[in-house]
Structures are given as C-alpha cells and as structure tokens.
Image 1 (tube, rainbow, N blue to C red):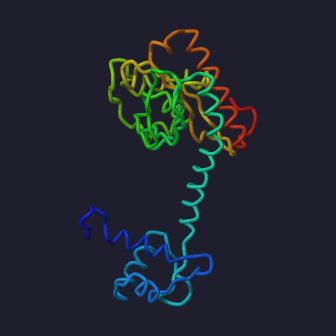
Image 2 (spheres, one colour):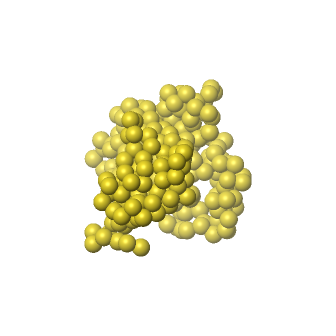
Image 3 (spheres, rainbow, N blue to C red):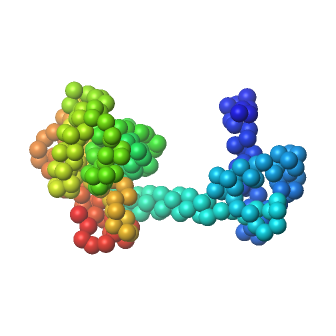
Length: 261
C-alpha cells in the first residue's frame, strides 16, 4: 500500500480527491477529468474510479468512463447531518444541566461495545471530571454506555457480546454478560444508569437515554463527578432526576414520539 512520509495513505488521498471533484453543477465526472485534475495517468484514474465504484461510492453514468456519486454517500451524509443535529439540539439542555448540578456533562453514542463521547460541557465545580470529544469507554462499565445498551434488543446485545467474560477496569466492574444483562433490566426499568467507580476509581456517573424521531435510542447523556459527591443518596437522586428530565427535553426536541421515558 502506498504510504507517504507523513503517514498518510496516498491511494486513499487520491480516492478522496476524486470525490472532491463532484459539485452541484458537476454531477458527472469522466476518467479524463480525474486524470487531468489529479495529475495521474489515465489508467490510474480509471482504477481509482472503478475501485470507488466497487466500494459503492461511485456508479456508472451512461457512457463508459463516466461516473456519478452513488447513494451510499447520501446515506453517510444523512448520518453526519443527524450527528450534527443531535449535538446542536443537545447543546442548550446540556449547558442547563451543568448550571443546575455543576458536574461535567457528556453526550455519547454506541459504537460496537464502546461508548463514544461526541460532546462535552465542563462543570463549574472546583473538583470535577475533565473529558474530551472522541473519548471511548467500554460500554459495560460506563453509565453512558449502559444507558445505551439497556435499549438494545436481546439479539443486538448478543451480537455485541457473544462471549461470557467482560474486561474489569476496577474491582467494581461487572465482568460477566449474564450479570450485565440482569443489570441492564434494572437500568431500563428505572430509566437511568449509574456507574459507581466501575470505569475509574473515585469517579461516579449517571446517564439517561435520548430517543430520536422514529423512537429508537440515538444517544445518551451523563453527568460525571467525584464519588465523594455523587455517592450521597440525596445527591444521586437529584442527579438522576435532572439527567432524566434533560434527556426527555432533548428527545422531545428531536421529535421522539410521546411518551418519552
């Protein structure tokens, strides 16, 4: 595989450059256009186009050697737009949640068996959790992940966790799929998930699911703070109520059908 000195893959960059040739007033691109714009031989341009077509990103446009964008790119665009819309809709309610509780808030989605943070609003407490967009955590031991896992069907859960053992991040981590499955039943019943030092020592989190326009869960939100504050029963109850209320606000704004849990 061709790789540039800076670690970038040259063939991939060329493929992306082909996609960049398409514009609103240029919906069909010929192999000759690709060769001229990328400064490559026509045979190389032809291979780039045919590879993109075989991967589902381009499709033939009538005459041989002419291509248009394939529907797969529209699907990816819809996913990107939905993600951006989710962050936009959630931003205000997450800031309000921080104002109310002072703890750092997160917006996350599920990818395989990982919870991925896609937005963060830092808390105002002197001692608080510091996080970042793009952070990945095992879903089974994070509140934001468990809130998402609890909404999966039995088949979806089994597909993600075909084995029995789970990674132990701390002594408090759930380490078997059977135990996790039972725990998620409780999470679903009460409408929120907890993480009492299961992911990191001294860290506690509370999360609730966010539902989309068609009804299924699309994300979850959480607050995170030190165990010294959130293990207090009164503080936990207040945090859970606030997180659930905020998740309902976001779900409603996304167009989730009522009633929203």
